Amino acid sequence: MNVTQQRALDRQVMGWLDEAHTRILKRLDQHFHVSTKDGARDLVTDVDRETEQFYVGKIHEYNPHANILSEEGYGDAVSSLAGQVWFVDPIDGTMNFVTEHAEFATMLAVFEDGKPLLAWIMDVVNHEVIHGGPELGIWQNEQVLATPLNRDLNEGLMILSGYRLLRGEMALPEIARQALGFRIYGSAGISFMHVLRGQAVGYLSAMRPWDYAAGIVLAQSLQLRVGRVDGQPIDVLQSGSVVVATPSTYASIMTIEQSN
Ligand code: IPD
Ligand code: CA
Ligand code: CA
Image (cartoon, rainbow, N blue to C red):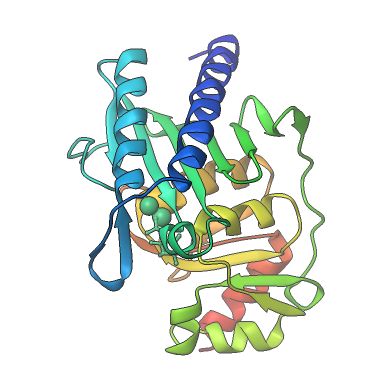
């Protein structure tokens, strides 16, 4: 897909996101059903399912041959990155969605034959979308987003997964100690947005493909570093502990991890 086609697709998906924004906020004012998946803290609602069905319908209208890897089961069983593959997380931060009615995101990413093309993360309540790709550049709504300053871990905020920090997983306690400060947002999408805007120097969590696909496309396009904490190459079809950070922070985190 050339850059002109990418620009047209970006505009089209921004239209889907406008519609998703209206639908999701309207549903927040109505009753919706909440149930659990893998334990009491893993929530899913009617709105997660409806939003995923909405995106799957739009993607299939756009490209009937696209494969979709999505969280709630309305996509496909994707085992290869051949052709056009979409990643969909309809509501990211469902716990925040249910309890706070704020600080949740919706995320989409598209790859072509393994190559990242475009991604979108929307902070739904604030109607802010970070979008673009390696060839198109990165935007927040209509404004170009610049590469964040290359600040080190001790010069900025590090975003972590709360439960994993409590359990002392990876080297999270030491990373939190060495950071200027640390934050826990409960939404991978909202966390990625902070790093993409340069408000935080990094984010580290164990994530599933739809949690991080969009974030890594946008981050790499802004010259941020992304990788797995175990040093293995990222396979976007697999779950894993993924770090996104400024180059300096990334190096500091990997040093801490290796001496852990
Ligand atoms: C979750 C959130 C959370 C992260 C979990 C994700 P969901 O996504 O992004 O911050 O720590 O690993 O599963 O389930 O609300 O889409
Ligand atoms: Ca989700
Ligand atoms: Ca998620």
